[in-house]
Image (cartoon, rainbow, N blue to C red):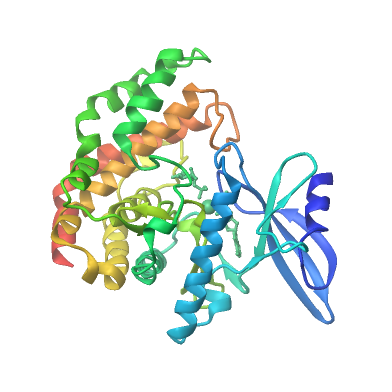
Length: 364
Ligand code: ADP
Ligand code: GN1
Ligand code: MG
């Protein structure tokens, strides 16, 4: 708490401090809401302790998010939108820096809480999920002319699935530091038997069939803020992984999280599967914004990307389980294994329904 206080004292916030509390359900950073009072008005800020284990170079990370949000603010202003609501507004420190480094070495950053907005871990309706598709499709469209080369790769090989298999999954299995491999042979087998399909998108990049774009790369439903009253999408958040990537990564990752018939850590696997209605809703929203810019190869692999990103997460959650839960936040000791099995069930369900998923894409 002391470092949090130290950080709060070093941002150029408006007004007097009222309160601070932990907030949100992200798996990576530690997020707080800090309330301030300026005259009669209460102002809310989001203050985050950056996960320095995940993001090794905080300078580069913050350069990226400042560059992207500055670009978006200008784009939104020039296109008649509300730049204070439709993208994140970062606050500098009193010394004019992008983030604050505490005496104990931890890193904090701050931005304005998007007013009257709410995020969801589960979409109650297909309309809400479609709206998140609009948000991520628009995000990609808005960044269409952003210079991808100017961005740092905040996490290398983030969605290079086959690289993760060879360089993370297999080594963690061989080390098996917690002696946990014996608990998850079913998932290990699942992953190993899908290895051949893990290089498909990377191969298509190398063959120049899939273009690198500036993408979000972490398109979970709870990385979109919605208007509290109208439930329309307002703003895409969590910009830490904005870097050159594939439109397919953004599509696939959103589906694997939001078109699951259950939460992604639901332990009762009978509840887990692909929700085709939600799949269609998201695809309609996403493609209504950025469909025009996609080439035929991108369109052809949309359904596949949902399966691939789901399988990638099976592997990432299981790798973290084998490593002793060092990456994702967990609430109990088997949490990562539960997540891996959940995503495995979802991937199996997609395998069963792949032709329907492909038909849906063709119909849009
Ligand atoms: P993580 O990387 O840990 O997922 P996020 O940046 O996604 O961190 O923030 C975690 C949660 O905090 C989000 O899911 C959202 O609910 C909330 N949040 C983050 N930024 C804002 C914001 N500017 N306005 C309102 N809520 C926010
Ligand atoms: C993490 O930060 P958050 O909770 O939005 C992760 C994603 C995973 C997701 C799984 C930087 O997202 O890649 O898909 O958890 N983010 C990072 O729920 O690794
Ligand atoms: Mg998040």
